Amino acid sequence: MSTWKKLTQAVSQLSGANKVIKRPPGSTSGPIDPIKETDDNDSILINEARIVEMLMHTVDSNTEVLISFGSKVIAYKTHLLPEKETGPGASGEPSSEYLRDRAYIVISPPDPPDGTTKLLNSQLATISFVYGGKFNEFESRLMEDILQLSASTAQRPGMPLRAGMPVVPPRPGMPPMPGMPPRPAGMPPMPPRPGAAPRPGLPPMPGLPPMPGTADAAAKSDVPPGTPGSAEEIMDRAAEKNSFKISFPDKVFRKPQRRSTARAKYSEEARVALSITREAGLTFFARIVDVSTGGICFQLPEDEAPISEGSEVIVTFHYWQEEEELQVTEKGTLLKMGNRQGKTVGQVVFSNESYEVIREIGELVAYVERVRLQARGKR
Image (cartoon, one colour):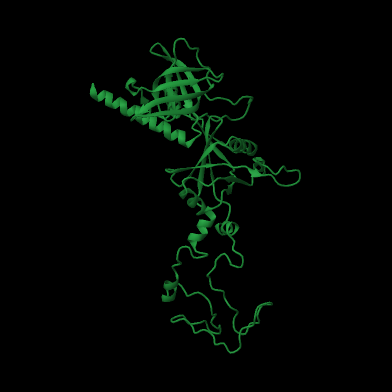
């Protein structure tokens, strides 16, 4: 082989040109881009019809949704809500049909309540939920103005929304507006504020609030909480709403569910009973191999038939902790069946549809890991 051919092969290997490039199905000509060699099946959904279908299913199934702000360290619970149908031929009953207009989404107030405060402050929110065996996320923001929310919840007759703010009277010499009483004759104009000289040729405007930075402004800047029109009262009134409208997403990020990498190896000292219910309704007991907040690996009894991959199952844990009997039930999907040390084992990924169940499984995982470490320390 010539030196030139050896050099060409070496360069080809370094540049990756010798990799097999897959051609899309049905494609016969044209340039082909190399397919990224990765197991990451993350995708971005931009099809509006599929986004609507996904959100309508989430509303109709009353799936619990997580909403987070900023760093996503703290997640709050909420639900996507139906809205009463209106218009010709409408039933007037709450429905998810309004989502077909792709104008907005109705959600319940985030729980705990400080999540509602963040939403009302127009912070960018990340909405997360499970659908189709995948985690789905999209970004959204409150669509309604806080002042309008406050006015709609507690509008007091005869009192403006920002009560307590001074009303600017007309300038001297300016004719009053129709329906307004004329300015009393002989009323002297207000003296100018100290240090704030009026513009040449422009008479001072009485009734205006003090300029920022002056002593008068400092004295009037603090509005006592509970005062009509104060920021605290406006937020309190807005928080009384039982639903909010957020913007409709133009794309949804999707990622497949995976087992959490933090798996707790099971120890018999934990004494956790595991039962699995098949799609047909038949239940059997199995031995735990390891467990995590994302799923479980179990050993199938010899007298049980294997479960088909992709089947939906219900997993129930039953155990005692500090003289308290606990039970956790979660839905899941069987990922695969295999063999480990001559035993048939299966792996189930949890659906994680409920924030409360996720927390309970996390407590179970911590308990199993704690018992295993205690048992190892006694040996």
